[in-house]
Every structure is written in C-alpha cells, then in structure tokens.
Length: 258
Image (cartoon, rainbow, N blue to C red; front, side, top):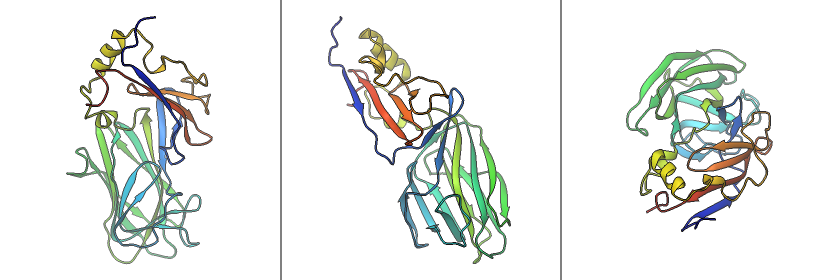
C-alpha cells in the first residue's frame, strides 16, 4: 500500500440542529426551514438560529398562538413592513416554496421575495408580489434559475397593522445546496480540479478511503443511509432523524486549510 503521506480521514457525528436535507429523486434534495426549534416572542429586530442557518427577523416573530395559521407548532408572524432575511447562502438553481396565510381575522396583505447573489449586498425582486387573503395555508412558488450562490429576503410591503403568517420555507434543487466553495475559501486551493489532482497523487478512493461504515448508497429509496458526495466531503444522511450518520473527508497538502 502506498504511503498515505499526511493524509487524515475524519468521521464526525453531526448535531441534531444540522441542515435538514431530505433526499428525493437521484441528484436532488429538499431543504426545509420550519422554525419549530427556535424562539423569538417579540417583533423587535433580532437573529434566530434555524435548522438551515441564521435568519434576521425585523417586525416579525416566531408565533404559536391559536390564531396563527401554521403547519406544526410554530410559524412566523410578520407585521407592518417586516422582513425575514437569510444570513447564509445556498446554491442555485432551485425551486423556492413557502406557505402563507392571513393571521387571525386580519385583512389581506401584500409581500414579495427578494434575492441577493452577493451575500446580501444587493437585492432584486423575483416573481410577482403576493397578496395573502386566505385563512388557510397555501403554497406559493418562486423559481431561482441562476447557477450561483444566493440568499432570500421576504418583505411585507403593504405596511399597516395587518399581519401574515409564513411557514415551511422550502428549497428543492441539487444536492450541493450549501456553498462549499465559501466554506473552503481559506484553503490553499479551492478548485475541484485541484482536489481531484490531490486525490490521484495519493492513489486512494477519496473521502471513503477507510470505508463506508453503514454501507450508505446514493439511492433515494434508502432514506436512512443516503450517501451524498459533496466533493469536499461525503455524508451518510438519515431522513428519520434529520441528521447525518457520519461525515468524512480527505485532508492532503492541496486541500487542507492554510
């Protein structure tokens, strides 16, 4: 067996609040933010740590009253010209959906979705503005067609005291939603070609050199041992627990942090 050099292979357990990734058909996944695991009882501007990452809420709170229309125990309630903003990037293209309804006995409200391709510096509206006048949750859809990292901001534009509920923000697209290029921006080299070259120099099987602990497979029917190859790391995902069984990656001189 050839020398492994300074190669290190790590297996990690991932916490329960890890990214919620639901395998669908081959090559695609769905990530969902449902706000079930967070608290924010006041409208004052603040950040929350959701299942997908950090969110900034202004004139918006995490609600759970009987008048809030929700799927589960919690949802968002937005008033005035409130905003709900992602503070992290995902990778497009993908389909964005969200569930919405009028809060309690309030009158209709108008809101829109804005997208940023530069980590929140500039935003532009996508799709048409939505008028929410329904008392039960309905699903609205927006297409994100650009192959780029992005983040989303929901804006209530009609102002006033009327409130809306927002729930189950869902992104459906390719497996590699989370911007691994950003995560490894401090690496000595960040290109996929350099990673490939580094692996070939050590004559191995990449991230799975030391094996596949639970025999995970890239098969949408194997929900609790679903294999995801994200190039920089490999993961076995359990849909039932909404967490990883294990994660492994290869560290060699060309891929380790500087």
